Image 1 (cartoon, rainbow, N blue to C red):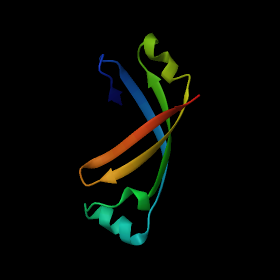
Image 2: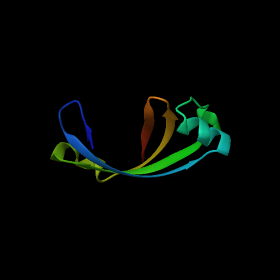
Image 3: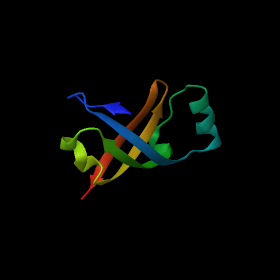
Length: 81
């Protein structure tokens, strides 16, 4: 679940594929930074908003990329037109 600036909550169901070498996987598990160019991290989020003005989120297809950092996971979603 994410909350938008206007207070609308959006449910996110995200299917992802992340591929990393054993060395990089161990670095991630130990909380150490990894060069994101060395990790394949792609996703396909399905979004569902709680208010009508954001219905287009449920009616659109998205793809995304991600990176894992020591302080969290960062995702970027892109709408497919």
